[in-house]
Image (cartoon, rainbow, N blue to C red):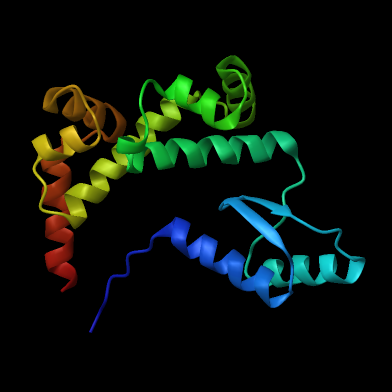
Length: 183
């Protein structure tokens, strides 16, 4: 028997970090899945134990501020796309208000590090969400377009085809065919 597992990545990461920090008796504030404030000065031993515990699970501590900011931008964009009801206004305004930097600065750092724009990243992530909804839900394209705040189904379909080379319905047909072959 085969099972397909679906992960809530944010909850998984948060639980993972809380477990390891609590096990080491470290006082902390978890701001996001990649930003933690340690509320005490860590001894070298405790710091080494934390780094070692995280490293065993493939997690590293980031010290490069630009790389950290890029990760924070990606997390905010992903969060905004997954739950647009908690945001209002444009992506640029939301990023600036959330991360407390000018959008010009955020955009420059992101482009320099990833060789793409924040807008392009958001489009790619949005299309990924469309794929996820097509494969894992019974939502119609109209419902998906509404949920992801596309201006129309035609806009969603055009962006999807431009990004993937397939129409949403062709993509869904291919994925359904794959799933029936695997069962």
